[in-house]
Image (cartoon, rainbow, N blue to C red; front, side, top):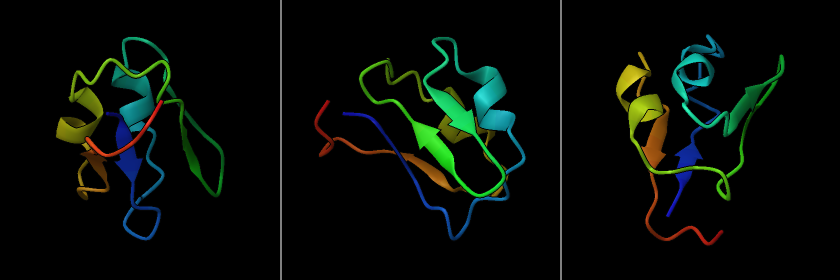
Length: 62
């Protein structure tokens, strides 16, 4: 399991980066990077996203 980001929807606001308790997300000016090996599936980044760009993805492998 992990987080999948839809870069076409992403507003690059950084809200998800700030709420991640394990720092599994990082952002540059063109992309959000998700370290699914660190992700604890807490859903915080999914819930805070104002445009619905993040989703939990049970099919992702670590």
